[in-house]
Amino acid sequence: MRILVTNDDGIFHPGVEAMVSVLQHFGEVYVVCPDKERSAISHSITLRHPIKAIRTNIFSTGVSSWVVNGTPADCTKLGIEVLMKEPPDIVFSGINIGPNLGRDIYYSGTIAGASEASLFGIPAVAVSLASFDTANVNYQQIKALFYQIGEVILQNKIPNGMLLNVNLPYTSKELCRGVKVVPLDMSVSRYQHVGLNGPNGDVYYWLKDTYQELGALAKGHDFSMLKENYVTVSPIENKAITKRRIDHVSRWFNTFNQTKEAFFHVKN
Image 1 (tube, one colour):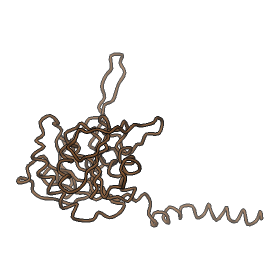
Image 2 (cartoon, rainbow, N blue to C red; image 1 turned 90 degrees about the vertical axis):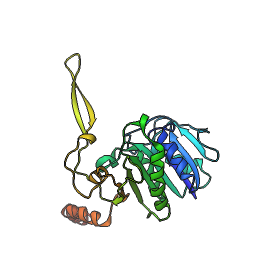
Image 3 (cartoon, one colour; image 1 turned 135 degrees about the vertical axis):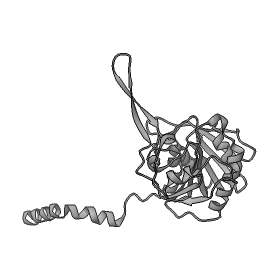
Image 4 (cartoon, rainbow, N blue to C red; image 1 turned 30 degrees about the vertical axis):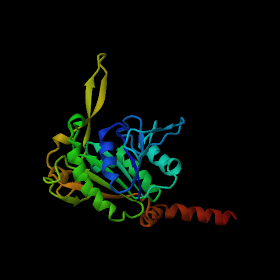
């Protein structure tokens, strides 16, 4: 099995090393990651300047890896189209520091790295950790939990056009309460703009992450289940449009089109 790993925290982040060390037990691992942190960059790709992919040997023997001065989506795309001789069987993005929940799917570079793979019809998994303390995370503990989750995922088949958004509680596999496959709680506005007064009387705005301060949460969704020490898994489909929605919106323009058809019928 060929496994491509990317992230948005940068190739030197310990989360990607933890992921690589676990996934090596399951297949041949390739790594293509940004050269620095690209958090909250969403699904952007680099258009205005060329990008480099430089081989590196920072991981253990047998892991082919490249560092890229681009986005997570760039990394996945380059890995699939150029760097790997054969396409990967699955793509993992992470392990991200900080959870990705609810509306984060629209902002997260971690999820974008996985989403790019699903556009190619390649199974993909985004993995994030519910901790923000990079310096003090016990990655040995996290690897033990992720090993069990990854093993189950790799034993099954992710449908084409779908990715799995996985969030790990920061706890041991013994204290983890289990796995909940849950919907995303899109009602939570996690990031809030905070105004700051500048020295010249101007007001500047900074996005504050209120995750630690969230109160009542919808039961049975990703935010609440992760807070209760469950691993959350949320399937996300990359269906941009559906036939039902096309038919629905098409009906809005029936009168306009009928008028146009009548006009051209008379004109001809």
